Structures are given as C-alpha cells and as structure tokens.
Length: 125
Image 1 (tube, rainbow, N blue to C red):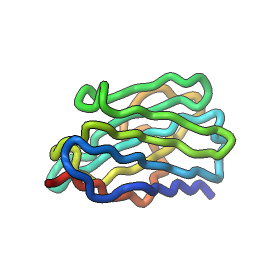
Image 2: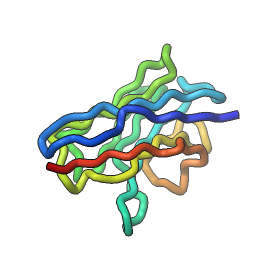
Image 3: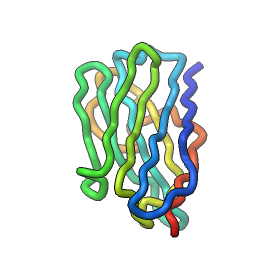
C-alpha cells in the first residue's frame, strides 16, 4: 500500500521559513518523482514543485522559483520542501504526491495517483 505522510506545516509570519517533509512507503522511491501541490480556499489545486528521485530533475512553479527548494533523502524515503521568504499568498493546504508511473517528469496533478493527507501552511502577521 502506498502511503505518503506530510509534516512540518504551521503558522509563520510573512518573510519567514518552513520546511515540509513527506515520508513515502509502498513503492520504489528511487524510481519515482515526488511532487508538492497546494490548494487554497476557493482555488484549484496547483503544482508547486516536483523532483525526480531517479535523476534529480526538478520543476518549480513560477510563483515559488527562487524561494522554495525541493530535495530528497532517498535512504530515508523522504522528500523535503524548503519554503523561504513566505508570502501571505502561499497560505494553503500542501500535499505531497507520487505519480502513477515511474520515471515521470512533470508537475501535472492529473498524473499523480497517490496523495498524502495534506498539511496546513498559514502565512500571516
């Protein structure tokens, strides 16, 4: 059974930082990408970042480039999303997800079949 469990969310002031973690199980982590998505109230789910655990290729949404960094520790089967210089508009529920096929490259939510439960990130003063 595929499982993805996020942690590290919370409340932070604008300009602050948070690091999200996603521990994965139930599939060959080294062969898959892990994506991070978010959904704000009243908005559609959007791709934030994705990283191939096979070759390290990364993708970022334009809105987070230069502020967010995705990384992985394959030995720990864990993906990380380091979020710096957070803005109020980054407030959302954040999800990590695994795609439906190995060696996937991209960040389209419809290509991801396994999702974590989501974790709240609130940026507010």
